Image (cartoon, rainbow, N blue to C red; front, side, top):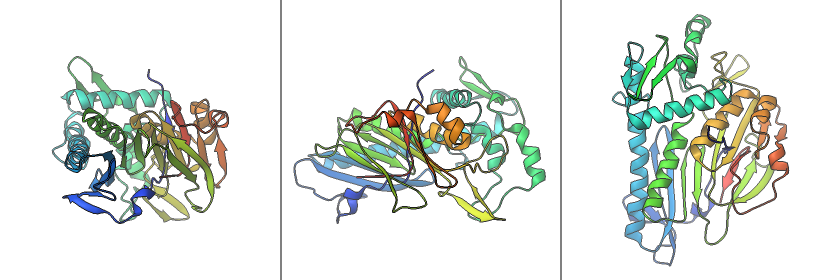
Length: 353
């Protein structure tokens, strides 16, 4: 099984705060016309804001590359969103309870990879969490009642997913199973966007989608800088780490939530209870690929401090628990500031600039 990785949180690209000039529809630059100009675009995709930023000497070529990366994220959203009725994932959720459903190589591979993370985390990461999670509505401040949760809980188990590698099919062994790839698909989309940029010869770029980002190369000859902060106390700096060629993902209880009866109900669901996991506030994972950091930030958030550190203690990790205490992994203690990212790692809440 591939190595697992960790990191992430609120990624703010401070260099883009200068006044920008639009080059093509949606594509802007702060310094167009200079050698090695930076170009960027934002778009609402996958239920969050996606941002592509890259460096290139030719404005037209750069903006075409930005659009190609955004198009790749749109393509993945169209195939893997449970909110798009025509997506392959929606078809799987409708029909897999009745028998094997052909899902194609890409979706099949991501579901299989999700099961790997489920096994590694002993079920803390589980895409079938949505069997209960779909009954929450954070905008309307709605949560399932006890009877609904009791009925949904038996369907939460990644082992209900029966995969046929030869036929590329998925079957649900329990009729109540519902899958949501929200804990891994955005990271995968970020990785795919980076692959598109690399194929076009781009060597310096940043791709972000919500709490998942990946950096390609450096920025103007210097490493990108991750400023790690407490998600509740933004003025409190935890660490400053320089990196290149890294992915970061953050899972936190402050992204989608409401409070009721003295509790915070948020979108990171503990598969064992069908309720929000509450031991920690945020987990940020640093690693080589965003697919891995996305899945692992969710895994560690659900596992909590002790079990989460057991899972990734040899990597670089910072966890902020529910009381605001900071927990640092052995891997981070051993890590001096460097220009290249370790293979895996974790932070707590990060600004990028």
